[in-house]
Length: 278
Ligand code: SAM
Image 1 (cartoon, rainbow, N blue to C red):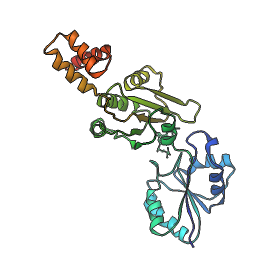
Image 2 (image 1 turned 30 degrees about the horizontal axis):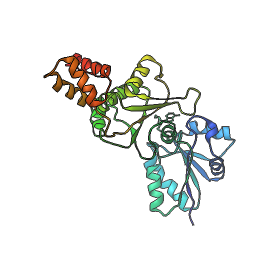
Image 3 (image 1 turned 135 degrees about the vertical axis):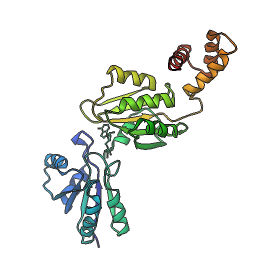
Image 4 (image 1 turned 90 degrees about the vertical axis):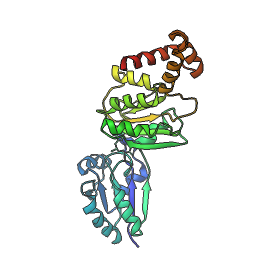
C-alpha cells in the first residue's frame, strides 16, 4: 500500500468554482504541494483549511519530486494544486506525475476549472475536435514561423496569451490565417470583468486597438480551424492580381468577389493594404 497523489483543480478566478470533492481532499491529505504557497494560502484560508503545505514549482521540482515520492511510498497522501485551474495544464506537476506512475502510485484527478475548457465551451466555435497549443512563442519571428505550421489545421485551435502580447499575437494570427476567420477572445473568465467576444479576426483586432476589448487580465484565444471554404487573404490577393493584369481594377475586384465569395469592399481593403505594404 502506498499513498495517493491527487491532482486537484482549483478556481480560475471565482472561488465559488471549487468543488466539494476538492475541499474534502484538501482537508484530508497529509500534505498539499502548491505552486505558490502564499497564493494558495488565500484559497485555503477562504475554505477554512489549515493543512500542511509545501512549495512545488518549476524551480524546485527536480529536488522536491523524490522527496514527495518517498512520502507517497510511506503511505502519505498528497494533493497537488497550482495557482489557478488544473495543475499540469501549462503548470507544474508533470515530473511528479511521471514519477508517481513509475513508482506504481495511484494518481487521482479531482477535476474542476481550467481556462482552456471554460473558454472553449463558451466560444461559439466547434468543440468536438480541438487542439490546445498553450502559449505561442514570445519572439515575433518564432511566433510567426510557428503559426504558419498551423494554417491547415482543421480543428479549433486554442492558445493561452498574456495581456502584453495579445495584440501582437492577434496581429500575427490575422495576417497569417486571414482576416475573415472567426476567433473568440475569452478574457478574465469567471471574474468580475469577464468578456467573451466572438468575431472575425479583423474585427477582434480593431476591438483590441480601440479598447472595446481591454488589454488587461488573462486571455484565452480560440481560433476557428481551417475548412475548405475558408480562403486565405493571400489567395484572394493572388486571384485579384492575376485578374487585374487582364481587366480593369474594378472588374478584377468584381470577379474576385464572385470567385471567392468575399465582399467587394473587403477585397478593396486587402488590395489597398497590400499596395501600401509593397
Ligand atoms: N492551469 C491553468 C488552467 O487550467 O487553465 C492555466 C495556467 S497558465 C500558467 C495561465 C494562463 O491560463 C493565463 O495566462 C491565461 O492565458 C489562462 N487563464 C488562466 N485563468 C484565466 C481566466 N480566468 N480567464 C482567461 N484566461 C485564463
